[in-house]
Image (spheres, one colour):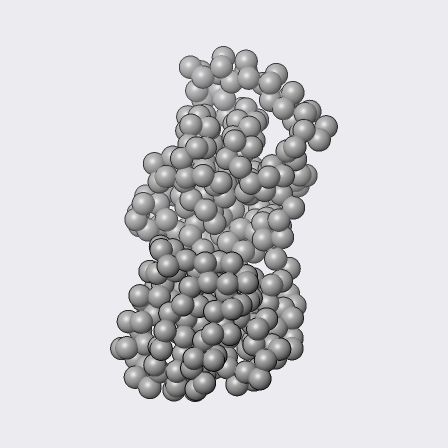
Length: 347
């Protein structure tokens, strides 16, 4: 048992075992949280428990699908648990239970960067490796963070898509989230740099803000098309904005004339891809994210890596990855969704 490696904590852990059993019992009785099933291979790979922000979320169903495939490939044991509501308090109880069960690693999408750190540190003190994915904690309370995409990659793919779709010439506009949204502003600044450096015939006429509100984003789209009759494309680096823009364009005279692209989810954008309003948009592939997370966790448990900058490990079909600064592993460039592949995704 993993607990025998830390005799100082063994008593405390055993004392909590009873409460763990009660917790699992209450969860299964419908106390607001939920625990899902897992799979055992009987192989030599690590026992890895996935803890998404919440269960019943198609995005995390997809990331867990990738994680399970990876665990089965390296002969480990996969399990998924999680709350029904995405709150940090609800995640803490599952972290404590996994610690008491002596799992090899926890793969967590954090509902809060700090609120779950005490529970995570308790897990790590008991030799449980902790890998965050999708949403990170503070860097000092986990071993690795699997980052789905970096700012430069997100900016680049959006510029690539819009310039390809408008023939690298003409007016475009950006429909963003809130004016003070840190992520979106960073991406837009990088997009401006890329446009200025490599796309001299593309003019960014205006950045407008839909505040991540569907109706506001819809109205901003209408205003852009009225203000700029020569507009050839709209880039929206937010899932709310791109869906609202596509909805407006799909029923207007601009359909087929004004390109809409940016960051969206397949389920939001499917009808607009299928009706021809949207040619292509991007996001990361959550299945690959879960797959890489599981391999990273297994590498930590086996001792192949320690999580230090420069460590390298193999992640099955995805190839080799290197640990970067602050224990971050980058999945890669965002994934492009279009008519040829959107049917393969459900999130």
